[in-house]
Image 1 (cartoon, each protein chain N blue to C red):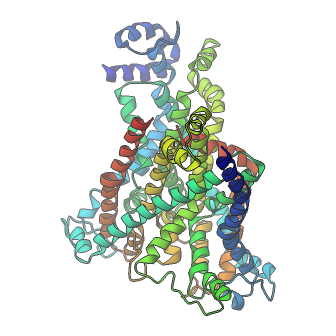
Image 2: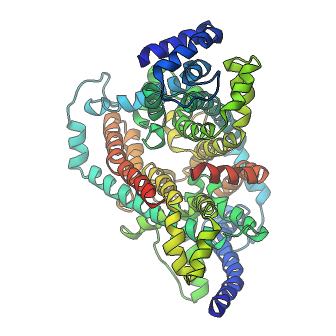
Image 3: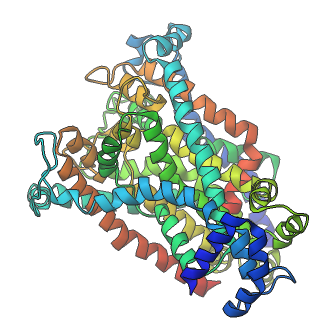
Amino acid sequence: MRVLSYRTLSYRTLRPALVVAMALVFIGVPLWLVLVTSAKPQGEAIKPNLALPRHWQPATNYRDTFDQGQMLRGFVNSVLVVVPSVVLVLLLGAGAAWVFARRSGRLVSAAYALSISGLLLPPAVITIVMELRQLGLANTRPGMIAVYTGMYLSTAIFFMTGFIRTLPYELEEAARIDGAGSWKVFTRIVLPLLRPVIATATIMVMLFAWSDVFYAFFVLGGGADATLPLNLYQVASAALYLNNWHLIFAYVALMSLPMVAVFVIAQRRIIAGITSGAVK
Amino acid sequence: MRDTSVLDAARNAASGRETGASTGASRLRRRGGRPFTGPRGGSAKRRVQHPWWFALPALAVFAAFFLVPNVLNFFYPFTNWSAFHSSISFAGLSNFRTIAHDGSLQLALRTTLEYAVGVAVFQNGFGLILALLLEKDTRFNRFFRAVFFLPVLLSALAVGYVFQALLNQDGAVNALLSDLTGTHVDIAWLGSTTWTLVLLTVIHGWKWMGLAMLVYLAGLKSIPGDVTEAAALDGAGAWRAFWSIRFPMLAPALTFNVTTALIGSMNTFDIVQATTKGGPADSTQVFNIYMFRIFGEGLYAQASAMSLVLFAVVVVIAIPVILGMRRRERVLL
């Protein structure tokens, strides 16, 4: 017993120091690099290092991300693609999950299995482009929204079906007895009860869609509808060799802010949602 | 019979739920076997009360923008679809022959699989270490959990640029090492045909370690306290208790994390594109990098052929691994 308590004592004193050291090295250093570089003039930033800027010019750099990098347009484009995608994924996903969770039979199981196949199968990005061209949706926002919605529906349906199965059926029955129809039961009873899992699904879809650049390349291309990550790619690829680190990192800092803000505001719910959804 | 009952349900839904209620009892008898949830409940009621049309919009969008492209992907690889032909005609296996002969198929396969294994190891390793370090629910731990979750919130492209700036030959890590050692350090972190791929998997693991940590934390929390107490009473030290008792009980969390790691790494693009663009000497050219490049060159059918290979790899390798882990989980718990 004594040996054990000595050991736990030493671990207990060492652990916080270890945690702080790890946070400084693994999170602090990259973060510091982003922030100091984003305040340097181009000449100082060309060889990125951790030194403080000799000449501070954060205002110029951040202003340039708006002028040259079209930060504002990218932000609006991102919002116009990500928000409808999230809303569609949640609404359509919840409707399907409700049916899949409450009904039984071979057809339901088959439809459910098919709908969650997107959890594992890769999206066929090349033929998506082909199809969108034929539908006249290539290089358009509706096309991008449709692709994101198709990609993340599986995740939403999977989480929501699992969650609805744990909800007591009596709640729905009580509403039926009070005379509510299917639509009313869904909107007044099921959707509000889904709130925790909706939070999870929202953050998951946002995490992927907000930062996606691969599918956006194929569907949106460059152009006037380019989202934030596409703009970042264009800023970084503006010169043959990466030499505008000051702008890249000003861009990275600004474009990450919305996600960080969402996380800070909804931190507790996000953490609870991710952890409860995962291990079930 | 099932088909007719679906039709019934659809008709009932269309004509209002009251008609369903009157036929509910008889259909319940025919089907049988479902738990009876109350005098007015039962599966027949459920069919009426949860009409198919609630699922139809989701099924339609999913079919149109996920399933149909995947079905088309079994067709276009066998055509000459490209930016250089005005019409599309059948071309047999020529696209597969091309990517096999120039070695890009084997290369993409090998790099992607190595990448996936690396990510599975590092994402899980980092996540588990963090979860164990930050296990107790204290204010200190909650703060640092949020700190280590930060990379998850950054876009993968941004993460790629951050690490390119760190690991460049003129980058911050070499500068830091030079200052620390007093000599000029000049390591080409991103220039090795063997080790750069490994480094990229470490970066990918770093980006997602916060998510893995949260999942492991939930797994640790779900282990009943008396199990660990019993282990301690039996004289198991912390090390033994972890590997013999707690780690096996983390099986569901491990399955989830390995699944997300495998699927995420099979579809990786951003981190590789932002750090190496597939280089040096194509040694980090994963499937998506190849597809992106070759699509940009206008060779659409060839890109589609590679996409079909990726599909096959996921079906043949990733899914059996995941299903196997799920089965193992059921044996363990």
